[in-house]
Image 1 (tube, helix red, strand yellow):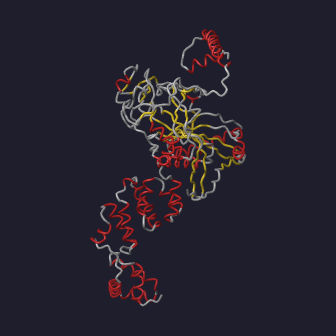
Image 2 (image 1 turned 30 degrees about the vertical axis):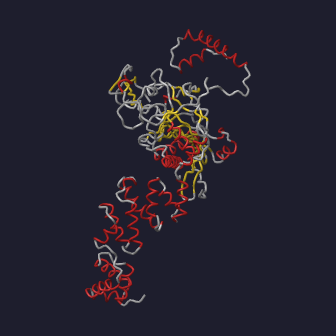
Image 3 (image 1 turned 45 degrees about the vertical axis):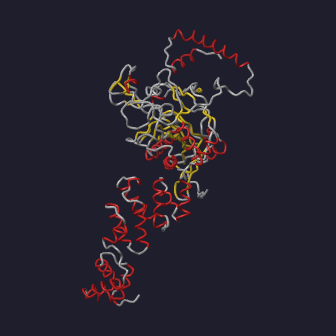
Length: 95
Length: 505
């Protein structure tokens, strides 16, 4: 699968990664090569093979409905660049 | 199981300039699961705490944190599925739905995209006695709720509270089977009722525990039937999604506005843009959410932090065995068992506690009479004072005791209303109150005769008039009732007054 410049621009925007205009073309090329490498897997016949979801045969473990965490406002906010009255404060998001 | 026969309601028809139009509605209802802890963390779900107090490091998406699923939440999703007569998928998968927003610290919402835990079910939406719409449910999946952003506390900043982040939601997705604004509101009402019966969701819409995204499109008569035959969405109109509705009244108003808006565009030769809209209750209109204009591209993929969710059929069977009687079944049973009307049964079943209250009152008594008192007097009074059945100052035993006194002829209907007032405001045992306050109905003919004789003797002129014109005898009945403090049996008084005045029947 070949990736073009427009796709790189869109994916970068969706991931909120800034990519300068002159980097788009080289990155499209690199991504295309990476995808082509991975595409070799398509040559393997996987008819009737269930998709693998884990390397160990395990089922999802469940937890009981008990409150064991929380009341850690200061720890939660410790790394925030800006806080106000217990809230995270971020540049205005206009709806 | 009892099933009431019903007819389909007719779809809402809008008369346009170019002919009639119909509306087609599908809904995505987000119901918060009534768990103590969140879906993937041990933080509390309690509503109304201070900002960011119910946040674990998992919810805040700190590096290295891993989600562990809450068994109770899974159980409630299964209960909801069983309550909607839906297929339960023993294997389901969690996916990441990727988007950026300040109140979503992970940068993705954990949801179920391709393999939801619950498949196809249905909701029977009651519109009137004997009229109901069977709305198909496409799926129910579990997902995380997002946090809350507050935009009006600072001119330059938005404030973010992550308390709701990670709370478990069930998203219940309907087929586009709803055919009018009233049906849309009733669908949510019925779904809420079922979820509350199940205890899966508290249904508190003011606190946002239940919210609906409403998809609305319009079409010409006949188009919808063609869609049902072929399954081809192409024959239906372009839909708009009205986001985050949390009131039945607003849902009804928003659908009505949106249908008329779309018809006006189409009749003007325009075309409806598929978009997300918000309802403004102040203005009574929907408007486009410009910020979401960018085409959605959520890039779903299976969450590598979570293995597929595999549950045992035996567990599902055990959950099924523990389900309470659901509204449709309860309604049918009340009609069969107590002889109440379908309308009354519907009112009584509105919530489980109310139905239980009624059954306690009706047990071993006249079911219809019990329904009249519970609905007209008790519910009426509760509504007036904004109380829930759980806050009722009068117990089912007290009301039942009062009905016994009425049935035995110990008190008249008029006295029963007085007794109701006393029980409501003062409480106490109905039989004791009647005995202590001398409220017992006088059925002793001798005592009534004496009262009649006295009133006639004191009013000789009126007695002469009444003898000539029997319709005037009502005045004497009233006087005797007054003289006996309303305790005389009215039928007996009437008969004795006529006898006393010498009026022939």
